[in-house]
Image (cartoon, rainbow, N blue to C red):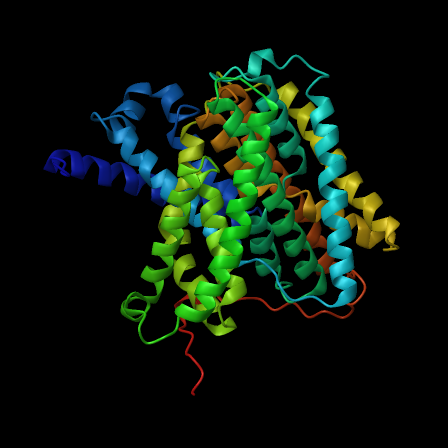
Length: 443
């Protein structure tokens, strides 16, 4: 009970070590050539998975990753931990403080980047035959929602990493884009929860199903934000909180797991609980505590669980047998133009200049981690099949590449990102920063 044989443990550790090492190696090489790290980490799964190793040496692939009964479930467990921690870290990057003008711009962009893109994505589902891409749930309504989300979704983790790498995280532009992405994605995760709820109902859609799903999601969000804020604010740093005193990080991980478990039991999606846990911690805690929490979670998450998550996504892809390059190119062009144009028009409507509007359009078009999360959840719940799963993952990767390259050019040329960011000096983070401790201020 609760045990594996010595041979099974040794085999799993070898397989996990190879996958982790390849993810870090290719992630590092990707960053050296100015490509977002996530692309290299997913590429690790492509190299060691069915796309390359499994195609040319299928027996070697099966021996490494399917070497004993249950090995796939062990990778599945690490995959889920990585997914939860990715969403928790995303919540910890949520922006909360704005002046009146920035709040106005952010609100306009959230509306302009979400509603038009979502509607166009929904309508697009009727323009091509979706039957070949349906998953085991065989639910066209859920599939249409996933397509709409894939057009409108934005990545907090990847765009934040791009801003950090370029040394522009302190800019007004970065603050607005990250805030827009955060609010934007919360709304889209509600839609994803609705899609998975419909899929789990066996394809039956009624007004009662819609009302129930919306009510549960709304109640969970508002309840978590309100009660979480009050409890975090009042109970975290008091002397009676023995769990927090014994382990700061352990305390917050406990909260994240409990909220994720509650969300899963309510059919809201466990990842949503992890995201809200991060948002509440960011909003309710003193800045020095939230920064220390983010550093602690990031150290373990981005060194182990999250690279394994992205690499495992790559392991599930078979681009040789389950990928249509022509369809992907068309979908990429359609998704990129739809999102970028929607943001550009919104930005121009609120009287931003053309270059600022272009910068915002390309940055918000970054789908990155959330795009991959969308594809993972939709695939695991049977809404989409493996071929469309590959399309969505590749869409997330390529649309992460575009803004990274463009913003690097803008910064290197000394061009203004947006009004208020004139003469910005990039603040590059040293590689050793992650090993520095954050001390609490003296009382």
